[in-house]
Amino acid sequence: MKKPAPDQHDFHFWTDEKFRIADTDLNGHINNNAVGQFYEAGRGEIISSVLGPPAKRSIGAALARVQIDYLAEAHYPGMARIGSRIARLGTSSITIAQAIFVEGRCIGMAESVIVFLDKATRKPTPMPDAVRDGFTLLG
Image (cartoon, rainbow, N blue to C red; front, side, top):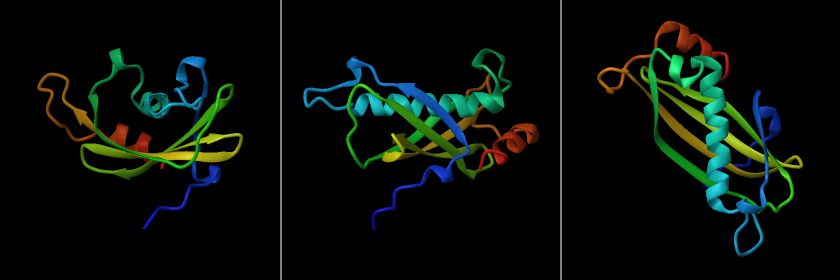
């Protein structure tokens, strides 16, 4: 069964991205690669809001899984509003739920799993309590 499109009220963390002419495909709409990059921008901002900039993080983070559902097309020019929230907290991972809105209309949704890594061993590591607390606030 298909999931219903989320509402803007489902998200409290927002990233805004401007469409570029390079984001279009031969059909004149925003292409799937650009859509993936918009979700990546949202993931990067929500993760950085808790962990800080990559060079200063006490733990690493790696994308383990991403699923994207395309609901409608969008066209240049325009803006994408990427809503993000923490959908699940694991021991060493988080699941981020996201949706892209264009002029208030949901054009797609995504779910991503981020695994936290020990910077020395590059193996999964449990989230420190402060990190867990930070992500809990973004749920």
